[in-house]
Length: 291
View 1: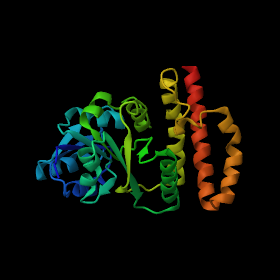
View 2 (view 1 turned 60 degrees about the vertical axis):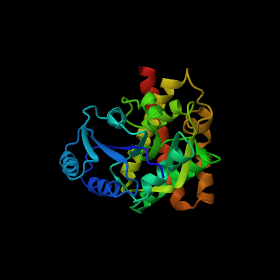
View 3 (view 1 turned 45 degrees about the vertical axis):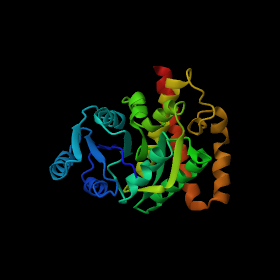
View 4 (view 1 turned 90 degrees about the vertical axis):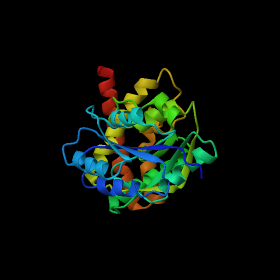
């Protein structure tokens, strides 16, 4: 297979517990022509030392420091330095199979796709992590349009470098920087979904972390809503379904319905995530009105 240069960008913040597994896996690829740009996003643990050790061990690895603390800023630092024709994105709490990169970029190389998205499988299987992945899979299914998908997840994504360099991430977004990128990318390219191209995600969710995460997503969703509401049609975007009075009114009925259709465990999970999400939306609206 023709092997154009691929730049693998890994934004890293305080990932000393998972970073070695991530780098070991990405340096064991069957695809040969690639570089690894690990962007230290102002970490306070041993992230820098770990990346520098791998940089000395393998010339493919490049250490970059980005002081502006947001995943978007870290990704942009990597994108700016990338020399590959294709850019692949991976998170530091993920590890991959040896065929991951070749499988991810194959549709771009052989079928002239502009962007592709894989899926993630959580390694930890506690209640909160398992149901988070279940919810993510359901959302992916709702976002499908044939073999294409209407979303981006930066932990398993690739696109042509010229496309990504022309768009970049919004560094001011703390959450949902992927959604913001998708809203701008969708007018330039369709995103091919590759459900069998998996990254293994090492993320231990708890009640508190799930609540914080969904609250923050709701809050930053409103930030993005205010950013685009005059310039883009958001009505048909799944993520913005919850930004409506009707959705708030019908939410209790929908949650009760899920107790009968999905079982007590997953329905209980939905109660936590949907309520925290809506609270984040309300707080975002309050802050948005004040400003």
